[in-house]
Image (tube, rainbow, N blue to C red):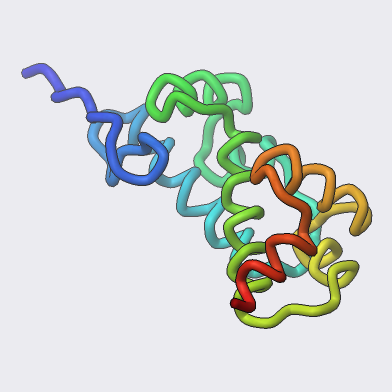
Amino acid sequence: MQAVPEQRGGAGGIAAGPGTRGSERVWRARQFMAQRVSAADGKPWSVQHVADAVNCSAFHLAHVFRQNTGMSLHGYRQRLLLALALQRLEDGETDLAGLAHDLGYCSQSHLGAVFRREVGVTLAQARSALKR
């Protein structure tokens, strides 16, 4: 019996649930990363932490993750962090340095640079647009 390949659909081309062993690991990795990001405790974590959580090597996880989602683990993590940053700005967050720390960035400047590169506007511009 052949496993049906996952379709790249939904949020950012990421399949919804587990299918094959590789896609199950990807699904579990996505769940782990989402939980870590939502904790927003400022504690650093790496690809190796994710790989350990899903019981495989970082190299293998990086390979199957990109194969199943079309994006890197780092890229997916950045999307999760920036989505949380946007949510907190929308909720009225005013302490950008605290936000950066909570999300695990070394400084407000670092978060701002990543945010501008990925979203296309500054944190201040996003906050102003979300207040309207």
